[in-house]
Amino acid sequence: MRGLSTRAATLILAGIPLVCVLIVSLPEVLRDRIFPFDSALIAANGALFASLFADLGAFFSAPVDWLWGYYDQYPALSVRRHPPLFGFVAGLIYSITGVSAMSAKLTVMLFGLVFAIGFSFVAKRLLSSAVLASAATLLIVVTPQFAIHFHTVWLDVPSLAFAIWAFYFYLARLDGDRSFRTVIGMVGSAVLALYTYQPTIVLLTGIVVYLLATELRTFFKDRPLLIGTGLLVILMLPLIGFTLLMAPDNLSVTTGEIPEAWKEFASPTYASWMVTDKLSFAYWLVYAEMMIVSYPVQSIGVLLWAFLRIVRKPPAGEVVMLVCLIVTYLAFSWLIVKGHRYTLYMAIPATFLTVAALRDIAGRVLAEKPKAAFVAGVSVIVTGVLQYAFAPPYAPYRYLGGMDGVVTSVLEEKPDATLLYSGRNDAAFVFYARSLDPERRTELHRASVQLVDPADLDSYLEDENIDFVIVEIENLGYDSLETIDLFRDTIVSYMDTSTHFELRGEHQLPYGAVEEEGTVILQVFGRSP
Image (cartoon, rainbow, N blue to C red):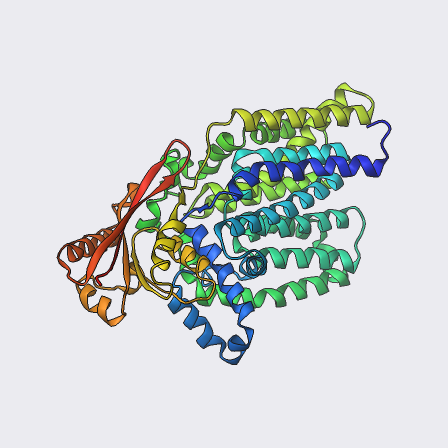
């Protein structure tokens, strides 16, 4: 970049990946729809914290009662299964923007921007080139599998936004900065990542493995490292206790049998997702198949890197990335529950190794390092853009839209209504009801959670003073869920003969993924005048 200062060139090149995050994220962020299962529950955690911030006095006077009271009013949260940090940050953003699906996706996108900045800094330190750093960041940002997670309400990218900085500080340590500040940076980044989402520990374990392999002999003589390790253990104890006490089922499904309900979400594209025999090759090749399909450039790049390193010893930073790639692959392959999201953790070290390989190839062809870096950077950008442009439609999450209209139609008639929802998308309904109820006047009930026996429907409606019943009449491929079917059939049968309720309207909601669009049909029953 002749004519530009080094600082200006770096700022411009570092800004390119950030622009790409906005390009791949904003179109979805601005759509008022959400993945109605886990994403709705995770987004609802932010609404909990936003409500808590607005009612601190009542919370501090009786915190347990306040929390239970909130859950009784809006019974769809994932605070039991997930650490609190994302909900805390989302709550701060909701306090400014209001509770909405768009605000939840905006929160994830902001974490994505932090991740892109961190990734660029790590790449600059690893590859010693601003051009290659920006190119590497662009490559991972525009990879379709990764891109979709910059606007999907899940915890992987928010957690990785912190974890990537642990790599930055560790690479600084490898470069000779063995100060206490660097260790604290590593520990702080790791703790924030794990308090956002626990599975990130798999990626961070790669750093631990390499550190112990290379520094075990001097470990107990390194005072900053000892203090940092002790601090890490102390800070992690509450999270360990929280996970063991509140979410033991999360731990059990990672090594035990796959629950039948989870199999409803298995992608037909990967039949091997359901392989449970750890002695079979198919079990250990699940993620190889996913990586080849979702990250073809990185998959080829890792093979190129390995080939180039047969005769030339790799620098320490690249070995760290190789160790992290191997650890993440083996660890996630070992777990009985598998999913596309976990390839994100493998893609990070794979991308670094890919760009390093292209840099080395360019360096062998061109003698001048600046020219080699520029050619390698352009090559990375071109392959990344081509991978994004020619990738098949990829949307692993089925989005649900229009739920706000259903909620609005009910609350316009009775703002302080008590609502009962029956259907597979009940978490999304509760989230939208909370988003459209800033004064918290409504009360929500989920048939699948609170209505234990469908035979008790009549007495339940009267005892709980239910004003409206919303039931899913048709819900794509999830009609096989027996409990939902039972509630639906019972409620529809009851409403056909009831003199207390009448049909107020029917709503058709767009629901699905790319090339899998469908409709969810809801019927709303209100009390007869």
